[in-house]
Image (cartoon, rainbow, N blue to C red; front, side, top):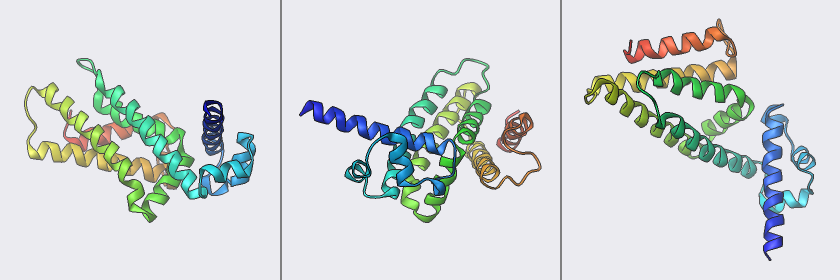
Length: 197
């Protein structure tokens, strides 16, 4: 039994790894179940033993993303040294990871718009990150934040995340994602709206 369970886990892991490999190269709409099983080196039957369909498979990818990213995000903000630019660190971490995984992220945004419950874990992760950023700001100032200060910081991140999503999905310009200019202006805009010098 343990050997069978180990083989089953190995097959599942191969299928998940195949999805990430394919999403690194092409949009989700251009990925088929046949592509997934071929990349994983398993049978179509092995796929359907583990996933009801392509949507269920994508939801598994998304769940694993949230768990992995959640651990990374909190770890990245856990040990911020005195004088470190945690605001820039937080938004650039979001931006760079989203840009590096833009095919996945675009598919997640589309699915979240059609199925709001799908987006709930992503929203909860964002709220955890925001709580940590607010905590860091209070530590930096040596006092509690006012409601207005909190609202400004929250809105600044809402605005910056919206800009990231729109820029990666639609690429409207004038400054395109992937350029050093985009990072500079993203951080500048975030801080200006947050009211943080």
